[in-house]
Amino acid sequence: MLNNQKMIDEINKMKKEKNAVILAHNYQIPEIQDIADFVGDSLGLSQIAGKTEADIIVFCGVHFMAETASIISPNKKVLIPDLDAGCSLASSITAEQLREWKSENPDAVVVSYVNTTAEIKAESDYCITSSNAVKVVESIPADKKILFLPDRFLGQYVKTVTGRNMEIWSGACHVHEKIGNVEFDKIAENHPKADFLIHPECGCSSSCMLKSTTMESDNIHIVSTEGMIKHVQKSQANEFVVATETGILHRMKQFAPEKDFYPVSEESVCEYMKMITLDKLYFALLNEQYEVKVPEELAAKARLPIERMLEIV
Ligand code: 13P
Ligand code: SF4
Image (cartoon, rainbow, N blue to C red; front, side, top):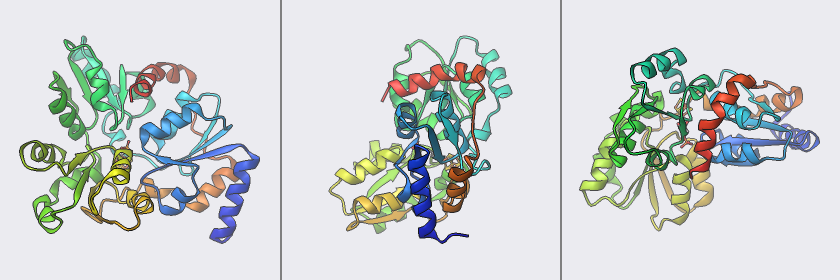
């Protein structure tokens, strides 16, 4: 087996030879973030996947992200270094369940989070990510009932902000759901000057939103992972309490090494995101494995909701 430095050199060499681009989500391990061409959130990475001139996209993230890249860039070879890198949230609804829900609400508009399978997207009218969920929902005619899926915390957040007539699927991400049990008031007492950065998938997002509107808490920010990074870049605060997967701290520290970052829980780790390692990335490029290709018939149906998501930023 090659040592890490040799592997990094080989990855960079193959990347050039094969005209490949490496995209990494903000939750990836530091070694993967450091070698990637782009690191970002679901929306940003989808935008890059749609525009890239590369022939091969290596997606260091989870399966639905690689599927989304394949749908919007059907002529590129999209690779994921580990096919088992799934997502508990994407697994929380099946296409069959969605079809049944739609049949009970024939006039409703279906809004799906990007953390869904291609089959679910193909049954949807709009796709959203955590960074544009509110804007996309606001773009839908006000008289329309909305079926929102699959994340109940993000759904509740969007419903409260927009005041829309919305039914919400009861799915959740196993990592963010647990963040609902964290004792925020105690953490706030220990870090009175910190900015609180909270992902809307968190189990606590509704109570935190309530706090941010009813208390003197303009230091609470409910944002996507990239929204967190942007906030760190512009904030005057010296301390940040971070409520999302801990992989994001690596990038935050790179942007502001002199500041302090505290995860609300060290246990907020997504085992799926962590399946992508340097050696799997090396083999992905070497053997051009594992290709994620959404069949064109399905991709054609899933493309419209994704394009709507990419238009509204
Ligand atoms: P972002 O789109 O905010 O990066 O979130 C993706 C995700 O999987 C959150 O768990
Ligand atoms: Fe899915 Fe949760 Fe992992 Fe994000 S953190 S990829 S929502 S399981």
